[in-house]
Length: 309
Image 1: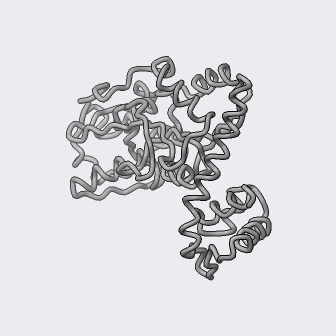
Image 2: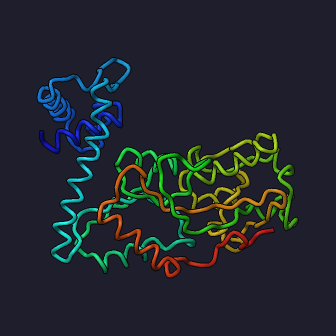
Image 3: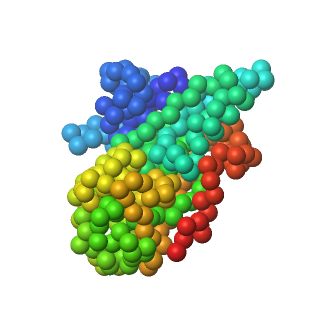
């Protein structure tokens, strides 16, 4: 039984698709199909039901999946142990990240990590699906860890460390009717058009839930995946926005920054890993660095009371 056969089987089982598994593994689909067929022949059992609607685990496949995952983790741990004896950590660290400039200095954190472990290759990914996409990639094994705001309630299957928190503030054009108010009630925003991130982003989910809890709906006129451009869209009259304070900054030109007094929202950045996967040595090294030196990578204090009403 070869490790790559198990790796391909796990990918197909988690993705429920040969096509997505091949994309995740960066190989052609025929290679995945061949590997899984070889594993099934060796075990003498069908592991997957192949249907027009997708791929499902058989009883044998369901029994094998946790054993296959544990075997791959053990093999990786053995590799890490041998290379660790050489005194230099090697391998790849696959991290996902959201825009958090001004809150957490991710380049400085990874720079410090590289100085300590120069033989580790770093891969930093963003997801067009926002925090929801990062969580999915963590759970399927495409990422080792993610800096994420986490959409909705904390997703199951993750281990998380809270890194920093920033208050959400309201951004309106300087000529807007609310610009001089200083603070407003959430109800005053119900009929306003909004500029926001797409569904799946942590900041979007935070605001959507605040309006839903109050029993109101809002209109999102424009969705933008790059949160840093939101203030420009607001400045040009496309709507108002609720943003983490580190994005808004101190009242940019042509804009006014307000607080929402009856909805004290806070945007929190987490460092998340998949709970059911034992962290590889490269991941454990970053987690130790964060635990030991986090304050040096925080751009400014953004505790729960910072900027609160």
